Image (cartoon, rainbow, N blue to C red; front, side):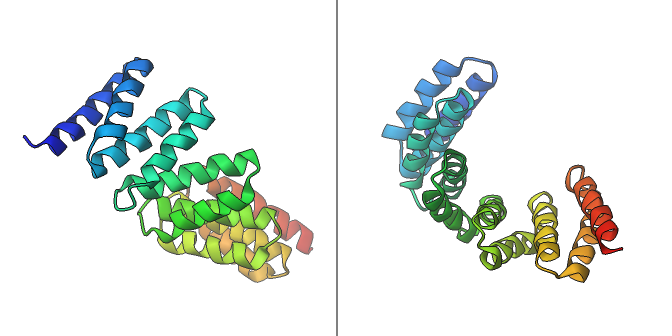
Length: 201
């Protein structure tokens, strides 16, 4: 077994340790690999460390761990670390840094981080009043076909279309979301469609 295989196994042990409730031990194991491991394992361990720290309310520590994971740009963890860090900073009000990080996630091509980055970036831009940019980001999430992010983004896109006078496009968007039967967004889109039709009378 190679040293990299051992590190991957150690990360799996740390995850199992965390799931069994020994957070301190999992955190210590992940810290060691994040600092001393080879690049791919170190990036993965740093990302997992960020998740552990975030779960126990240490936002500052989580941010540091996610930044460590981003130092390994070729690892699978880098894009998801950018996504998670961007979401944390967005909630903390640092919208410029959040925007940069969510864009990195969106552009990464990662099957999870890319559509989630696009969805969250669209929400951020919409709140800032950058409607056209928000629509472009949300369309990226829609086009991804992701089972959660795509219907969620289409619901937001429908709301933006309605707000900007594209009523027919909005109605079609809500109908498409309803057809997905998504457990969260289908009901939301249905409520939006009822409101749209009520206002249009």
